[in-house]
Length: 538
Image (cartoon, rainbow, N blue to C red; front, side):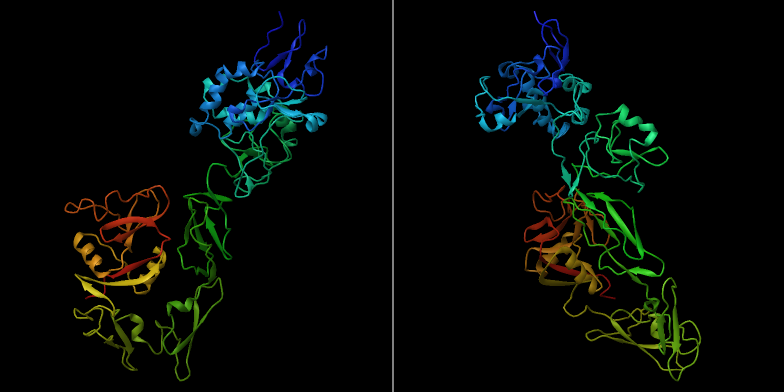
């Protein structure tokens, strides 16, 4: 009776010890009688296992010597169940398990040209080659995500080969054109060599007298590249003082937006190399500069790995925009980092040129008139101004008056205490926002059934945008004025059509109005819209 070897070993023969399974048919004799390099046949894997017509070499590390024995074992059940448990397992689990159960076979040069592989999975073939088993680093990463019952079906990790011995490792996966990592990155083989703090990694062989390459020879510890030999949460490296620091290596299973960098004369927070979908970055400018973006200073990374907006830029802060000078003075902005301006009185006038200083004072700078009136400064020595209501409005035009200017701007229709205007041109939600903002208003907000009926009658071009959106894509609906959406007692479902909203979880969505009610839609869709002015009437 021959020697019975434990998992991960193959026998050399009677009266000879067992050798590691990966040393069989590796092109170098390890048994004293050399029989580990005999019968190195490459066999076609049965096609019903859907492994792509690969060749295998038996016995495997589990001690199974025929395909029939494998097909009648729990090993095949493990392969077939890998898809149904995909959310709890490493994405490469099935490929790894198949490489253990059916050790890969590399044909010899003479067999590669003459061997015709049968697809029936029998053992009659003249194909000869060498055996190649999974690399230990791959084993460490894949099995790290497996539960104990699954781990117990395989040999222990120390029974798998590692470079420089030939072993099988899949081509590294990439994310955003960069090698990424699965799980905790035990098998990460990219070339990134900086930490999350921006520190440079040091050579593994130089750090702590080469402790790590000696202790973890399987862990691909090349140069100063980020790796995870000790099973931390993610790849790390050693820095100059000998301590460990996490590396900002991109994970494979998450959509990311690569850092756009800080704007010239500014910064961003948080400063990272990449941002996971759903994260935000806020841009600020150095003293003396201001953001001149049409968007907000905060930019979000969307679920498809695309930035919400382009990076804003910083330009010289023009102090003259605050109107510090008298109307009869010329304003000159002082260059950064100065935050002020120089006021020079025009010809025929004297003084410091400041609105708050000596010299001529333009009374209109105090904004005495309402938004629906035109201000005309009265000439010196008068210190007041004349307010004239715009065409279509009547009153004294003063902000402090109970009369002011009454009526809605041209094109707007009054309803209760607000003015509304339907725009029939197709715009995305954000474009529609900008149109309403130019009118000093917001997208219309039908917060009750009466307002909803009015908007429906005002705009016959259905569907149209109104002012409510879910920026998170997770059901957090907000009105355009910043208040959260909530139902009221006499309107329990708002204006939603049955089954709406139904795009929760699909990214940023916005609310639009159809004839029969509301529905949610991608904010990038072009639709007509209605604007609302809350201060159009006085």
